[in-house]
Length: 217
Image (cartoon, rainbow, N blue to C red):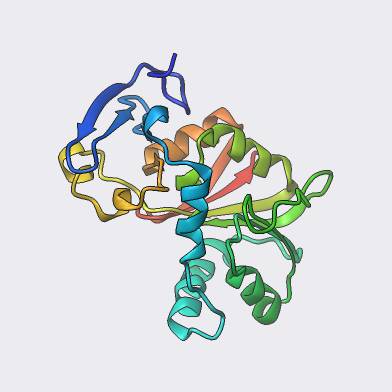
C-alpha cells in the first residue's frame, strides 16, 4: 500500500537519491512525488528547522515576496469578504499581518507547531492562504480537504509551493528537495487532480508555484 500515490491512489515508481540516501515515490498519473515514510525526519528535527526561520514584517524583501503572491493569486479572485485563515502560519505569521494591516482582513492563524489550536473548526472563511506549507504534508489530500471544509461557498484557497519539473534527474539536484522537512512535491497536474478529487476548480495557476482554488458552484 505504501507505494500507492497519496493523491490519486495510482501505483507509483520509486527512485533513490544518493546524496541524501532517501527514497522517493513518483506518480506517473498525477505527477505527485512523496518521500518514503521510513525516511521522514522526526517531529523534533522538523521543529528545529522551523525555529531557524527568521521572517519579519519589517523585512521589505519578505513583505514584497508575499505581496507578489497576493497580487497574482488572491486579489483578482476574492469576492469581497474579509474573513481569512493563514493555514500553516509558521513562527511569525507575517502574511496574516499583511492581510490585516494592508488589506483589511480579520485573520485567524493555524500552525501545527506554533499555533496548534484548530481555530478553523466550525468556521468558514472568505480566504484561506497556505504558503510554503503543503510540501510538509504527510497526508496531503486530507489536509486539502480540511482547508476546503473551512471555505465559504464563494471563498478561495490560495496555495504557494514550488512545482517540480516531473524529471527525476532534475529533482535529484533541485534545491527545494534539499530541505529535509520537505516531503511532498507537486506540479500543476497534481493540483488539477486534487481539485478534481475534492470537487473544486482551479481559477488561477502560474504553473510555477501559485495555485488558487474555489468550490465548484
